[in-house]
Structure formats: C-alpha cells, structure tokens
Length: 114
Image 1 (cartoon, rainbow, N blue to C red):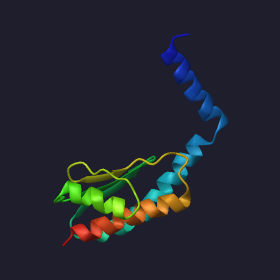
Image 2 (tube, rainbow, N blue to C red; image 1 turned 180 degrees about the vertical axis):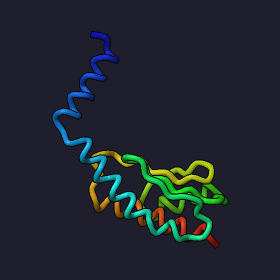
Image 3 (cartoon, one colour; image 1 turned 135 degrees about the horizontal axis):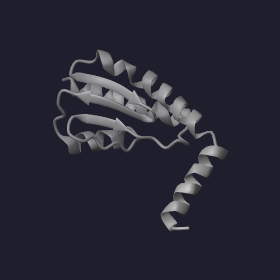
C-alpha cells in the first residue's frame, strides 16, 4: 500500500474508533455560542461557523502585528488574515480552552471598533 493511502486509511480508522464527528459538532456549537456577542459589535461584518471553523469578519483590521500580539497577551495564538479572524481548533480542545479562545476573539473584536 502506498504511504498516502495508508495515512488516509489510518485517518478513516480514527473516525470509526473515536467520536470525531461528535467532537466537531460540539466545537461548532461552542464556537457559535462563544462568538455570538461579536454580531452586535460595530465594525463586524459577519460571524459564521462551519463545522469546527469559526470566523469573525471585520470591516477592517488596523495593525495585524499589534492584533496578533494582543491575542498572545490574552493567552491564545490566533493569526488573522486580512480582515478575518478565523479559528480552527483541534478536535480535542477542551470546553475551557474554547471559552478562552472565544473570549479573546470577542475582546479583540470589541477593541477594534474604536
């Protein structure tokens, strides 16, 4: 068997043995709840969640390096691209870690409206 096929098969085996789809559903629900406060913030164009990916799209982001540093100060590593703050947490992230992550995004989004 070719190495890429073996890796793909091993990945599929994990989906059969471990609750990956439930983990993604739980993460999606948590991201939706945690990012919801961003919807009401001035300067936020959109908030969306698809599976295990959460996005807060802003009208604009000023200094990307400053914002990345602010996320680090808040205890998370998030790298916005352009005007989009996106989250792709590991399937094994804990609820407490997700809370920390979404609170940091809400805080930074609040700070961007000024």
